[in-house]
Length: 121
Image 1: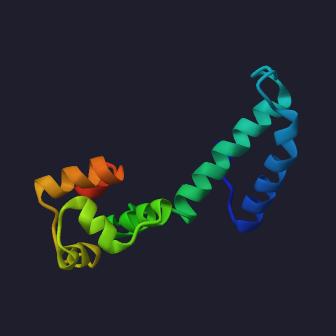
Image 2: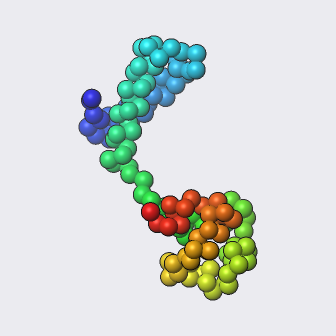
């Protein structure tokens, strides 16, 4: 398959995808030329982004901060929710505390954090 060789080609592909979006929808058959072009461009853009804009694994502290923001919670409130002291919560947020099994389970169930993030997999 063809590849996007540089940033200019990547930007042009994104622009063309934006132009094709209104022409492709649920009622458009898969063999429609616009749909075929869109699929090809999307694959090329995805491949380019995987190489040039990789997304790393999330850090546990960052995910906890996100949950705090989403639920409008303070660090103290999260500590209370998890049943740990504020100082242990601070250690967790600074990467100085490895979560125990119970704390890992509570992070998953009470804050809806994926186990792979809690276990750093």
